[in-house]
Length: 90
Ligand SMILES: [Zn+2]
Image (cartoon, rainbow, N blue to C red; front, side):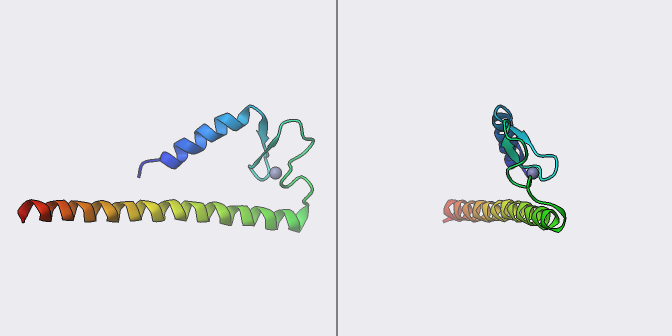
């Protein structure tokens, strides 16, 4: 699989690094001039754990979506190749 998503994520990361910092707890970005993370800065204990679990679920969903589109693209490609092959013999 072509790591296009990873490449895009890297480009977005580079852009964000200028004005934001990455939180060591939740790995999300927040404004460089903020005292603490705007996503998890006020969360403690069980709340923080729940928030981090939700983030992991979301990241897994996004990864699954990428895989889904990859499979769809492959199916479309195969169908197009079949149509082209049939066109050539007809
Ligand atoms: Zn955070």
